[in-house]
Image (cartoon, rainbow, N blue to C red; front, side):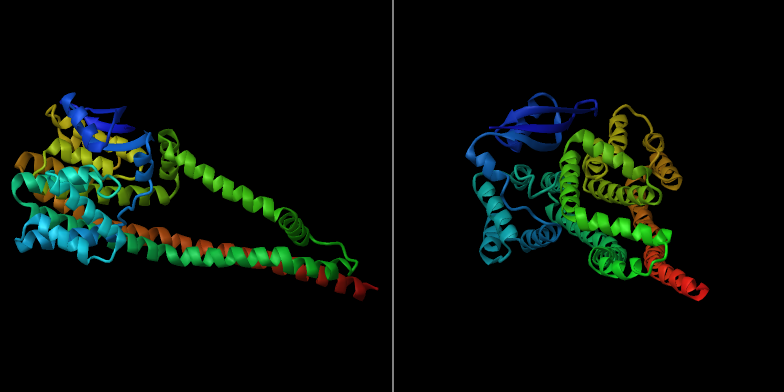
Length: 405
């Protein structure tokens, strides 16, 4: 038995949060259903018993693992062989430990009489909520192969998107890492040896040299406590970010950063419309589609704002107006949604909006990092200039005093 912190939707499409004790997430979903609530997301916050403790250390599916698993599952479904038999074959033939664990768990659940989505619902460490809902929609409508095809396309897009971001970040991170290491070595080990020669010249030390002496002295005397402090600070931030208030505070600060905030909004909006378009095309109810889409968003502040769209659907209020009030969706997309509501072309419009945002994200990334590269060079040039001035100015003054004599 353990405690779960949950987010659920009531009959009026309102979002409710709370904590309930349950054996597992499937049991939690059943308890909430008896209360007229539909589970959106759940997280274990307190467990008792060895089994629950071990659950924390069970394998998880990385993005690539989940994509590979989905592709293999799609092959099984499209082949026409019994699902249990096909998954059993995957369990025996797959060499990836994480995928092997997932197929084994799915096989055991199906063998015990559960549906595929019910098994996945009970393994949130393996299958995210939107994934489970897509599979469930496919089971209900008899189009499981189509749902898996949607998931393969979405997960492929997500993997390609992360590669684009990482490749854009690689250059500035590499340059700054090398620069930081080089400066640390110079300040800590090289400059102190040069300092004896500079002070022995007898001339008054200029300000750049005094700055270098202060930095070098601080690093030499406190570099170990400084590393410990930085390590503890990183750990404290990670722990603080795990709490709802901490994560919301950090997410709010990130949104206010120049350029970075704009990039975060574009990335999350692209992800939001991608999953909403996919879920809507799979035949899932509009209110649940928009609620799950909000849960996929990584930024808490944006997620809370986008969750309001799901709440207004059952009241008959305009979706486009609800989107306008969030302040995160561009006017063009809102106008497209307004026309779609009148013409009944919601599915096509959502896909088109997703495509528009997909194209905007790479352009925004290029724009942001077009500022990062010259800024990196300015920082590098400034550090080199400070180093040169701190070394050559004392020499220049000493030579000038010799000439005067």
